[in-house]
Image (tube, rainbow, N blue to C red; front, side):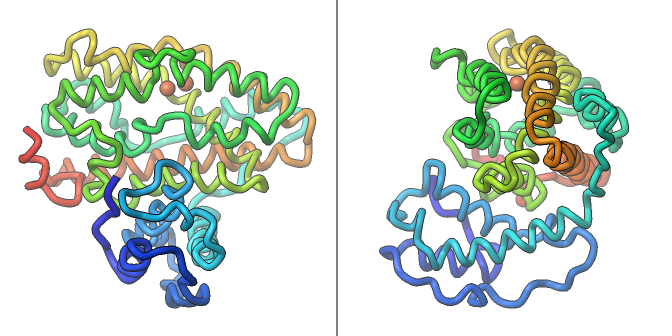
Length: 340
Ligand SMILES: [Fe+2]
Ligand SMILES: [Fe+2]
């Protein structure tokens, strides 16, 4: 993956520094003063979300031409910490902390959160009304996560023991196709992208996706890379799995309407089946087991789930809002034309 095009001073700084051998980036305040703390600004801040994504990506596949030594460069980690605090503050303002009631089983508490989630129904629109260009846009957004599907939640595996670990491994094994390349969910998504004549290389649409799409991905890395967020990471995965079967059935239906064959739709069809099972394992065995072992962390689990649901709503609001105005939900329209 290429380093992304800068969107402001933070990403300009990173873009310039990361092309050089690892060195001291400067004191954390080198990233400048925080923007005014209003509403959910950091969730929609293009420069901040892309800077965080860039920092996090050093822990995944990295970037072409960027020295691997940057991954643990202390001064860069200090900068990332400043950015993470802004992200965490924005999340805490946007996402009310659900209170955990000890007499309510975790599975039920999660189900209630999911049932209470609202927002525009992007899945129904994609099923019935979206045109091919809109579906392609949707897939370009989702490629930021789906081409590394499951990786952020895998960070939790070495941090767990016992039943919750076994439950997470069971889910992740499916996500990675049970060790078969052709069945890996990220590979199934590549097939869908190729059918839609989109570039299936990792990060190909990084310069096209807005802050909210990056935030959807960044929250997983934030929770995954910090052990203090372990409960939130598990709750996030549970919310993902519990809100997956129905939308994926709708996405598959939309793609069929737009001419997608069985192979093109397999990613979505697979999730209708798999996630009906995963949601049970995630809510009951994984999150329920974790909350039983660490009752004081049960609230974190619900908070992680609430963060996933809120960001999903903000993403849907962004995409549907743009489409209602007849505009692209991506940052520039013309670049997509080159891939048709
Ligand atoms: Fe999956
Ligand atoms: Fe799943």
